[in-house]
Length: 211
Image (cartoon, rainbow, N blue to C red; front, side):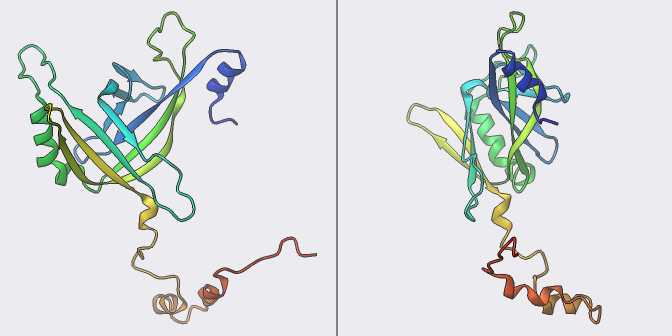
């Protein structure tokens, strides 16, 4: 079964298909879902994503190859926002202050997911191209690190959150090592000798099929 049956059907029928990136921040108190579009986006899985238009950007979304662990970054422009009736306006300075004061408790060490969403655009009733095809599909995941705050001479403020790839943790032992000594310490006399051969498998060349 295809991952994107609706998207493929639309493309095969001659329709135009576009896509957009979605970002899910799994903050401590509650998740935040954003997308680089305008308005509220409702995807087919029932989730809602707040549009940030051109006020946000991201980089480093790439596949981990050759032992590398790429680092992602997410930038949000801190601009003044109009308030609803009866509420105080939200300023760029207040956004930066909240990002700084609550980062340790809300963001640091939390996971961030990047997903891709396809859209069909040949729909006169949906001129803003917000008719999703299929469900969002995850293409990246990272763990949030420290933030960086920037303010230009023109007074433009922004906050950038970097996120390390989960592959960056691959060299840290999870309270154990792939060694025979560690295995025997955990299960002495169990007769499990599988880890005796770990060292001999490093850079080992296996010919297959071997007739």
